[in-house]
Length: 278
Ligand code: 13P
Ligand code: ZN
Image (cartoon, rainbow, N blue to C red; front, side):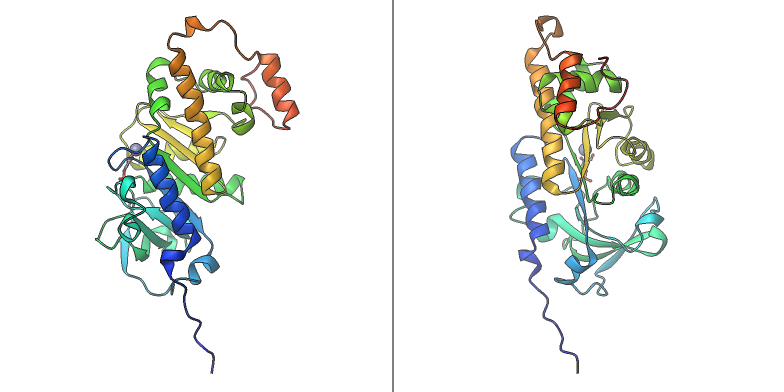
């Protein structure tokens, strides 16, 4: 007779710890006031099955925008309305582990969101972005959204032209072109939580891992929680420097186009074309 393998305690799962540490750090840095921000993390089936019986569904939640491409995939996601400052102390209400149901028309909650909370209201943007990133990067796993303060500030003071915005950020810190050579995507201002903002964000994710929502925040994509966090952190740092400078007329010298091209060459990255002229 086959012996039943004892499941591990989910509270000890490394992916849960990564989630609450990232959420807490985003709050600590001032990027996630109140319930601002959301994270979704694609989990491997074998990873989930160490902790959970995937056939035990707590509740099924219909989703308005179907995501056929994600059918059968497992994610850990943040709950809608959850305060990231409480994430560490309250993981079973803050996070949920879900499996995307048949034809991507619903999701099955397997663990968490115990107080009846729904997954983040930005699920359409997360799911559509995962779909697009997986097409271009088989290692892709994380979508992260927050209200990074200086990024938002810069969307008031800088032109919202993607090439110009990207170049300004690249010039603010030497590491930027190395960390995000694919540059910044920007969508127009839109109502958050809608299918439309989700679709437009995902369109940008075809070519960029960072997408700015003017006067709202930023979306980042990556292969790990750390990498995605670091990507947003680097763009936010560059925006902080831009904002600290204040009036661009005060800039006396900058990293030149030639130097940006040399940097890219030295670090073996290909900068998005059409931004530097060297
Ligand atoms: P949720 O609490 O639904 O995740 O929304 C927060 C947010 O940042 C909306 O853009
Ligand atoms: Zn938001």
